[in-house]
Image (cartoon, rainbow, N blue to C red):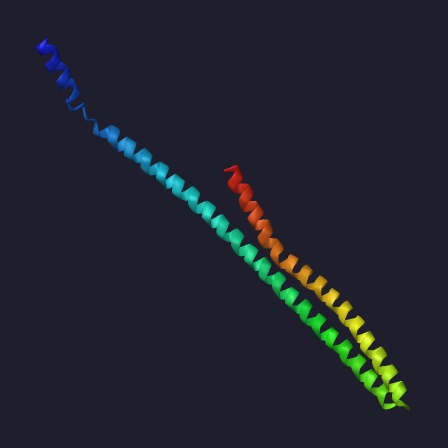
Length: 152
């Protein structure tokens, strides 16, 4: 029995046959797998960076176009308001009585209030449209990323 026990202990603690070729092959496979994974990760990162760059470029183009559109709208609003005010001033210079001036001024104020409400609505629509256009590329990119994450 003592011999069987010594043999079992010897097998447990015995140094197996060491084959350096197997270690080299295993290390080579591990290294090749690591390189392949690194290349795949790099390709994904490069693709993501290119997509992000395109998204930013599109967003900036939309923001620039929206800024120009809003600027032109502001200039047009100021032009209309200025023309209306000058026209009103010309009419005021031609009044014959205080009653006529009060009537003219009342109608001008009412007309300006209505115009201000219309202009505010138009501005609100324009700003909403521009903001939707500017944020759309980012939303599309995020949705695509979330879809890719859910697939993975």
